[in-house]
Length: 102
Image (cartoon, rainbow, N blue to C red; front, side):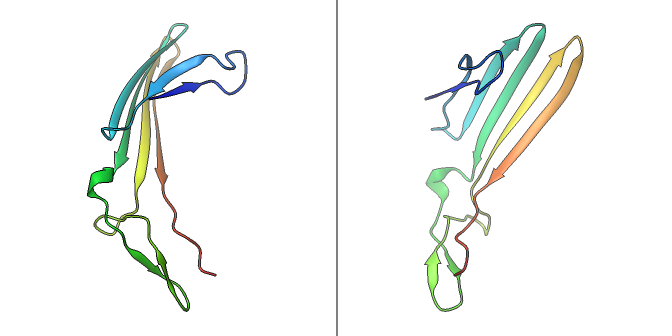
């Protein structure tokens, strides 16, 4: 389990939420004043389903990233934010990038 803390600002080093992706999914709740942050996190594809692939380069083959169905591993976070002045969804998707050709 990881502990996610604020990096800077007035909340620097204070606890934001826990994060445990061992099952591939996680939910977190954070209260900030009158605002409520509900976060969901997921890894795709799950680690157990990955396979090794190769990425062709000019003269040689280099190890791939464990693609499944031709897609590289990803993880995403989605925050649903509600409050007196807030009503939004923040979604971020992170995608692994393969080695660059020489």
